[in-house]
Image (spheres, rainbow, N blue to C red):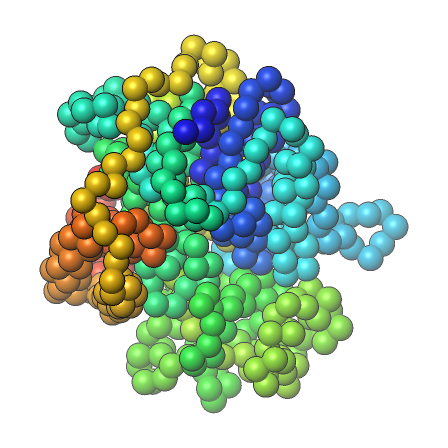
Length: 535
């Protein structure tokens, strides 16, 4: 058994920024961070484009950033949250700069940042480090975390379930208003022992759930663990139907998992979407053409692919300056060259891929979930910022703003909370080692096919019903395995992915309109009355 003052599940920018803020203010508190692989492996490090913040106030403003965010969110953003993130964002970016993060600067004596513009933004406001911004920000927060002796990072610890009154034998339902979180049961992957980790307060920072789809830019760890655990603990989730598909992943048949991301910043830099014949097509869908928001671009590419019966469209960068392109996008250039594509001579083949969850665990403006003593931060949350569609590069900003706010709320409260006594150890009685791992691996493949075929960019009532029917069968098969065999990371991830798939599909069925990232052929128009889907 491990006891700690603060438990943080996840080691991306949201989790580690929260740890830093609390550790800095209270050196006397013990802070435990769990990561199911190694510390640096997170959704954060895969973010290429950058972080959006109003930096050049002579041409940009909070009002412009807010309007861009609201426009992308398509009527479902919480304006109060948008105001908070946009106005507090520059200070949080300055924090990470102070912690050592490097962002590209212009080649002049003034040392000004080389701000970029991405789809949906009216001004240049994206701070970036080449095309490795997430990697650089992850590096900075990891280095800063190392400065605090009261922060302990446990690698290869897989959180299985959140501990609540349910584990004390009490009845817990989703309508219960006083559910409390006491910590988590976690599988120590080094010795295969399930440990009880108790805390005065728990912060869930587990990232996204892209692995629920066949093609995703998310790392293999992105299996929606935090959202699924919160749902099983009877916490509230919100807006799970809004799954952002990045319009331009590198199309490479039989290639990588995750698929390689061709950043939105490439289009902001001047890249133009074209057909195989070299014809532009985005003017048919939006007056902003290749700089339209992601939902519009992804649906446009998907539609052109279906009309033409082709597997991809193309991003034309041949007209761009080679030296500048390589300086801004060295990773993208090297990746293309490695598979025989020269972006300066060849158009880059691209196709949409699951990229970001706009919904998640419902939290308030302080990052507090519907479960007491439990906060959540980052992509696993639904804060109200993104609404029906995330504006490019707002996600890293959101994580830093809410990490700061969670720390500010926890610090004056934590002394009134104590470690819960009487929590039983994990009961593995009556289980045996799984004899056929193929049952788990094949179910994961089936799940990805179901979601990609029926709950993708374009949906319908028939597709959604078929998905729910198939998911119910997978759920029962998996629960039988879970109840009779010993726990493994693969089994836990499958179980979590099925929960995520169910939440996405059920939320999609509840929305009888098309809005933002959710498009259904049965209800192609928006309705006048707008509300979030809370499950």
